[in-house]
Length: 74
Image (tube, rainbow, N blue to C red; front, side, top):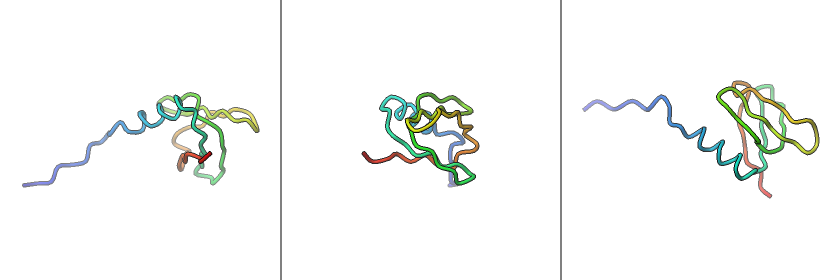
């Protein structure tokens, strides 16, 4: 019996980002350039996230420039 292929889209990303928006969980966003920014995700769509910060201006970050998003512990 042949193995089935993994689905092309799991829909986990939208679910996780929605959870982060609703909880206003503090996160660290690391970019492909190794720059890091901290804040919480206020809004997202298919192409970018809006990172709200207390120590600087809010940022619109294109998703294709993000290496990872990590939740920060309180």
